[in-house]
Amino acid sequence: MRDVKILTDNGVNLTKSLELFGDMETYDATIEDFLDTIDKKIKELKTYKEVADMNNYSIVVHSLKSDSRYLGFDHLADLFFDHETKSKEGNIVYVYDHFDELMDELNKAIDIIYKYLGKENNRKVEEPTVSSDKKILIVDDSNIIRNLIGKIFKDEFEVIGAADGAEAISAVANYEDLYGMLLDLNMPNVNGFEVLRYFRDHNLFTKIPVVIITGDDSKETAQHAFEYSIVDVVTKPFNERDIKRAVTSMINFH
Image 1 (tube, one colour):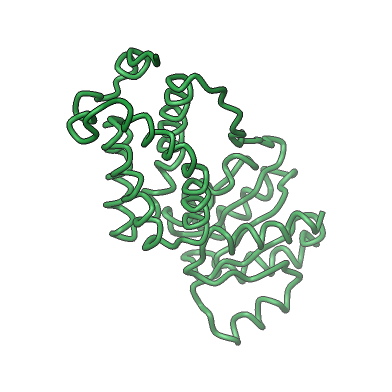
Image 2 (cartoon, one colour):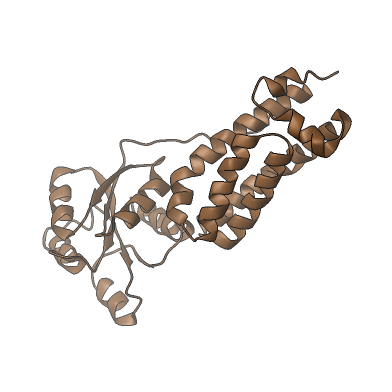
């Protein structure tokens, strides 16, 4: 006989669940089915987040919201609801801001389920590997873009932000161990091409690889950028996969 106190003591709304399922036998069978599919759904969520596919992301979180509510995990269901609402709005910044919180709560629920079922949880949960000795500089006048890229790489690098070319040049002077730079072109005060000229004049391209991030997708702009010794150009709007691909090229430069 499984101990339902493991569920209720951890805040599971079992009374509400049994209004739907009727008995514990049906509840137990359903919760086992949930475990059988959850890793596949988590993989889908991460993939859709990575490519900024908020439409499919919202579909998966809607399904998980319903599952969580049916099984009595009300707080988890509320978090999934928030992600469903924001992803339908196309608010990828919210998704990035709160994705780790969502995954933490989901993994807690999964741990409770394993304990209740008397099974050993042998799932492999990816642990972040922070390399604080590696610094990357994100140069963009948009705080949203800087924060978004920062969140993508927060577990891999120490992320430094600059709002224009002047701040970028100052950061280059202050951080001699920069691992690379992601540089917007269209910025106030000192623009991206002025930063590229600074890099060329001070022979910095061999020390700090540069990836361009720009909202200008014209052929002429890309050609002009590649007149300098940059690694890659990523056009806005980009997704996590685009940026990771470019940063992989940056890493391979070293």
